[in-house]
Image (cartoon, rainbow, N blue to C red):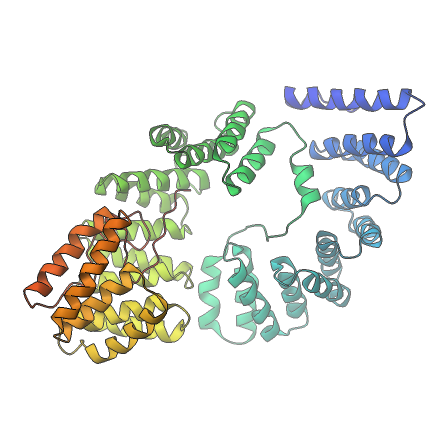
Length: 523
């Protein structure tokens, strides 16, 4: 029994109860050995989570001796030795775990990483390749193979693996640093620079049920945050709110963990429709924020308040919150996009353009930033630039149909006759319409027909679009669609590609974003 006097009261109680349970199993000579093994192993898990590593190691070794065919105990010993900075012993334990379960993805990845750190890239490559065979979309396996390629100065292979990994999981932002290094190795400095700006110290996606079980064993604020996040991921929002509230009871007030739990509680409440209660939690995070410096929870709370302000039409308040969000987290792409939308709604187009460009610089892959850039250029009447920008985007991202769709809009609505090209727009829209009968594509088709002078057909399609929007309860879009229909009835083409309240990211008063992917996020 370790000295738990300096731990949280909830942890003290938990450790004592688990120790007493183990003692009862030991005192009862009838306890089967597999059951005694589990008692030792579970006590070790609790001690490992509480960072009593020496006693945890002894418990695991007893559990392993009593049940040598059980994979959990050598696997947990591997992580324990890793935490203690004993890589050789960790490697031995993961090797034992793989002997018991040869295709276990987490064990393959962790042992491969240990081999890399020990300067054994060939051994690491063998394990990562087996992991990729077991799980072809494993970001962790691709990242491991990329690190092996970097160790061999095989920069092209590293780029291929890392680009594929980021396509699978764009949130694995820690991969941007090795990708930048690989591009530098190829001499492509122009491609390396954007990835340096996108880097963040994030975990690499690795489904690991045993590690999750260990993360949740402790009665602490952090373990309840992990429980709540898993409930959020499964869309069980009431359960998530309950976990976050319990975590707040255990976490010390004023700490980053407390702010993180409070923001996540607000997110869960928002998801259940309790908007006022959610706003209260977000405001509490802001009130407890540090005066300066990077603070992710504060940034997200300001972002969430900015989204709520935008939804209620409070434009200047939204701008203030979103601007503060990027100050607390300068790599917050969503906040830059939201700020661009909020500024564009207020008619501050040049400022909006700058914010969209910041988002693009951080994450050139995100189509919302490029769409916002084009929409801001059109609002500024820089129509030639908008057309050129969308042509370049279409070439660079041929699989992103929103760019060709947006280009068609520009080609038929531009006020500058030198920019308009209705014949080209017709080809684009017909191709899109063959596979996409959405309201936004139908709206663009009507614009194109009106520009060609076929007002009867334009009116017919626009009336169908208007009826579809009404049935779908896109009430905010109805005035815009009605206004365009009136133009066609008067034999006039549309000269507005997008209204300023059509957002590329924030919740919009016009939810049909005509060519842009609409994203509604409150984090």
